[in-house]
Amino acid sequence: MAEIVSVKNTGLRGITVADTKISFIDGEKGVLIYRGYRIEDLAKNSTFPEVALLLLNGVLPEKKELELFEKQIADAGRVPEYVFKSMKHWPGGARPMDVLQAAVPILAVGDGDIGDQTREANVRMAVRLIARVPAVVAGWHRIRQGLDPLAPDDSLSHAANFLWQLHGKKPDPEMARDLDVCLILHADHTFNASTFACREVVSTRAHMYAGVAAGVGALSGSLHGGANAEVMKMLLELEPEKDIAGWVKRRIDQGERIMGMGHAVYKTMDPRARFLKDMALRLGKKTGQSRWHELSTQIEEAGLREFSSRGKSNIQPNVDFYSAPVYHIMGIPRDLMTPIFAISRVAGWCSHIIEEKFAEAQEKPALYRPQAEYVGQYCGLMGCEYEPPNER
Ligand SMILES: CC(C)(COP(=O)(O)OP(=O)(O)OC[C@H]1O[C@@H](n2cnc3c(N)ncnc32)[C@H](O)[C@@H]1OP(=O)(O)O)[C@@H](O)C(=O)NCCC(=O)NCCS
Image 1 (cartoon, helix red, strand yellow):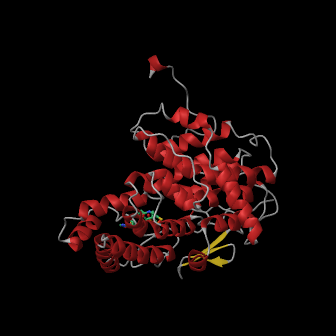
Image 2: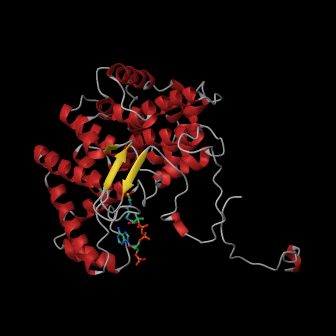
Image 3: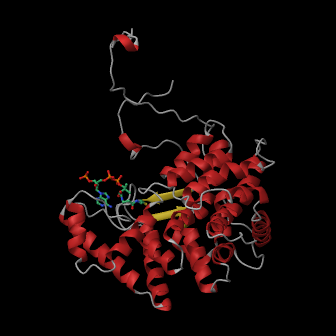
């Protein structure tokens, strides 16, 4: 019989709920590993499609296998016409994360593999999702401006294609490579809130699209993926501010959070933030926008001093802190920053969904079903006496 754990752990911090072979974090040392490979190594040497295949299959692909996967992604990037036709009727002011969350089941209704429970069918659906999530985000940005979505350009990389479909001009290759690196850095992160949401949903045997739609919803919150857009809001508000240290202190005194700082698992600087900080500096210098890196660094330093003086020196920059200035320098609107997180994380979500569905890291699939402690009205096991409305 399964052991009954009666300790309540609100927020499930530190509770192991499953095994995974996909990624590993050492929160004390600031280490992130995908399928055995350090994130720094992958960011320097790999590409997002290669990392996506690594996450999905567990091993780095051979050259031919990678080329085939890149072709599959490029072919699948053509979003079925009915999806954009439908989106053209949606209110132009809709938030891109809501649009994306709504678009995922709309993509599902046209996917011929939806009823097929095999791993192969799930991998095919994963390929379509990885290919189409960016096309939907870019397509929505065009639609809301009264423009038609652009078809992908097969000569461009996955990241470059997104920039092309978003802005309607061929991106600078260095910037496209930087976006590719951002996608690598965001692709997976063990049992974060959105991945857990995906896994929880498919543990009921719901299909992959149902899981991914839940993941998009969870990611949209400001304590998770929504934090990058909040960081950018803070940077824009603080641009004219002279007393950054005073602002940071006041905010913490008032019990408000400094967005982009702190992490449920990392107790030191997030390794992805280190990478993005350097990128913000380099891109800023290249484009004459160094102020965003300078301002972010000032907030970081003030935050570290303030947190440390309160005995919370483990609150340090996370991935969202420096991705916001990077995306801003790339010309990405603030409300598309969280959707870009989704464009990358969809690779991790799909890999976890497959691992969950096919019990690839543990003996057999399990339906998630935690307990809650009931603290509401209680009149004993016979229940409270019901009184009709007119007698209450
Ligand atoms: C991500 C986050 C939710 C993780 O927090 P956590 O480790 O689970 O811890 P808690 O939310 O319980 O916070 C612990 C304490 O640190 C404080 N804290 C944590 N992050 C903080 C931040 N960014 N700014 C100010 N205070 C913060 C909390 O207010 C809390 O203080 P208290 O104990 O006095 O109530 C939290 O750091 C946060 O809200 N960060 C800002 C949002 C963000 O960047 N999210 C993206 C994460 S990748």
